[in-house]
Amino acid sequence: MNTKYLLVGIAIATLFLVGGGLVVYKRVVDDQYEVDFSERASIFAWASKCSVDGLQSWTCGQPCEINKGVQDVKAFYNSTHQIQGYTAYDSVENNIVVAFRATTTNLNWLLDFDYFKIKYPTCVGCQVHRGFLIAWRDLQDSVLKSTSDLVQKYPNATLSVVGHSLGGALAVLGAIDIHLSVKAVDFVYTFGQPRVGNKEFAAFFDLNIGNSYRLIHDRDLVPHLPLQTQGFYHQGTEVWYNQNSTSYTVCEKYLEDKSCSDKLKSYTMDDHDIYLGRDISADCN
Ligand SMILES: *[C@@H]1O[C@H](CO)[C@@H](O)[C@H](O)[C@H]1NC(C)=O
Ligand SMILES: *[C@@H]1O[C@H](CO)[C@@H](O)[C@H](O)[C@H]1NC(C)=O
Ligand SMILES: *[C@@H]1O[C@H](CO)[C@@H](O)[C@H](O)[C@H]1NC(C)=O
Image (tube, rainbow, N blue to C red):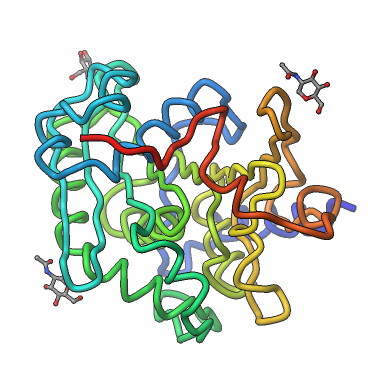
C-alpha cells in the first residue's frame, strides 16, 4: 500500500548517500501538516492579489490586518502576463514568505489554454504545463533575488512558498528553483492548486521538497485540472477539507490518493475561492 512512499524514502536516502552531483539540502522542519500554519499561509496567499503599494506598506486591508508582524515586503508585478507575487518576512513565525497571485482574469489560464506540456529542464523526463512555466519565468529573476536578500538578512528564518489557484502552480515551480539555488524550502502550502507537471516532475518535487501540502476544499474543480489522462500528476500531499471546513483528511503522502478528492464524480468552481472558511479571492487594497 505504501510502496510509493517507501520508494521515495529509499530514493531520498540514496541521494543523501550518493550525492550524485545534485545538491540536496536538509530541511529544518518535520514533514507534517500544520493546521495553524495553513491558516496563516492561506492569508498570505490571499494578500498576493492586493495592490503592489498595499503590499509593500502591508496596508492591504483585511489580509494585512489578519496577518500582522510582516515586514520587508517586496511585491512584483510583470505586465507581460499580469503575473504578481511578493516576498516578505513574517516576524511572528520567523518565516520568510514567498507568495503568488491567482489569475485575475477568471480562469482563462485553466479553461481556455492548452494543456500543452513542455520539457522541464531541471530534471530528466520531466514535463510541465507550458503556461505555468512561462508565468513563473516572468517573476523568476526578481523573486530569486529578493528571496536571497531575505535569507541573508534573516539567516535563521524558515522559508515557505504559498499560493492559491494559478498562484499555487507558481508556488510549486518557484519553490524548486528557490530550493535548488537559494536555500532549502521548509514549507510549500497551496490552495486549490492545479496539476503542474507529469509524474516524473511530481517525483522530483517530492524528492526535494517533502513538506508540501495541497489543500483542497471539498469539490473544488481546479485541483483536478489538467486531467491525469492528459499526463498530469500532483506533487505533494493532499489535505482534503469538508464543505464547511470543519474537518479534513491528510491523504496518503506523495500520491494522488484515490480515497480523497479524486474519488468524487463531480466538481464545482463554487468551492474554489473558499479556503478554511474564508473567501481568499476577496477584494483587498
Ligand atoms: C517580465 O517577463 C518577461 C517575459 O518573461 C521578461 O522578459 C521580463 O524581463 C520580465 N520583467 C521583469 C521586470 O522581470
Ligand atoms: C534568529 O533571528 C531572530 C530575528 O533576527 C533573532 O531575534 C534570534 O536571536 C535569532 N536566533 C538565533 C539562534 O540566531
Ligand atoms: C459541518 O459539516 C459536517 C458534515 O457535513 C456536519 O456534521 C457539521 O455539523 C457541520 N458543522 C457546522 C458548524 O456547520
